[in-house]
Length: 239
Length: 239
Image (tube, rainbow over all chains, first blue to last red; front, side):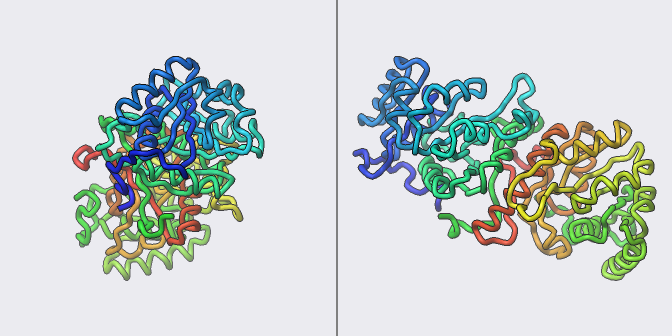
């Protein structure tokens, strides 16, 4: 079954053909959890943070836990430069400034944007920025040279570091570049989740807004992490 | 199990305590399918249509199929007047004009809006009207006297008339009136689906947009009707 494919199979050597993933905001819970799962599956990972020191420490801790030297750390700029695929996982308030700091290092690359436009205190209410999706604004800012892909907005960070935990949440992947979407769907599978090509980048509105709906469900039904599953598509049709 | 509760149990007499459901656009595929399932479960139903004649014919056909006289038909105005709970199931282009025709008959009632803002030809792309949700515009138009609830946007009309078909799609129910949401969740269960209180009416953006994402998935993976399931909430917590 797809979601468990390779579960627990840790590659002892970093695979040569896997791209370097640079995670901006890689010391956060979501970014750090994804980074850990990718490193565990053999991807070389570079953790970025506003504080390079914090990222270096976090990388050392991950390497210790993995028992292999596969994760490096540094500033967000260094992570963007080292990345073959960059992942942005920062709070919404820091999304734009982080991108502006690193944009010249992203040219020609895939940028996976994990940002959710949550506006405290009403995080259980969908509040879209300028009435559009947050990631579309980033694509406009970066221009067509960067292949922006939206993904992972609905995955609770809670259990990502627990490799034995099966997260019951599918990932919608949206982009105006279908080839980039396919690459990111591979990264979704690598963390043990099911990823679906949800169409153009504008469709990311749904994934971004859905996080607020899931928070509303968590509150209403007193559960820690409601999620979604896509139904009606046989596993055999995936990738 | 909730979704199959009472499946196949047709009440031979219309239950006295169930509200009359008036379906505006009740001769359409989605509205007609929902109406048929409600009538089958004992709800008195009034089908409305722009053509009263067509609705009367459709009601007669349903009664024949059900083997009991439980469905009436007439104009959309008559359906709104007869309704204790009104359901709006018309194409997006007709949403506003239909509501304006019947608005005085809706005062104090629940209006379940099933409308999806699909804008052909790009139905696989989320295109929100005036960058908000379609149902919020309807709530503004009707004012606080009408309890507007958004639901059923993601349910494929395909199999609604086939009572033995188990549709694998949950229903997000959004409203600024939580009591009205609870009433509508009962109607969701009555058609054999799982309904979830997705929070305030603004959150309907997700359900409305999700239909375009599901159409994108149908096209990408060559399936007839992708859907969603909410995960992480035990059945026991529902209602």
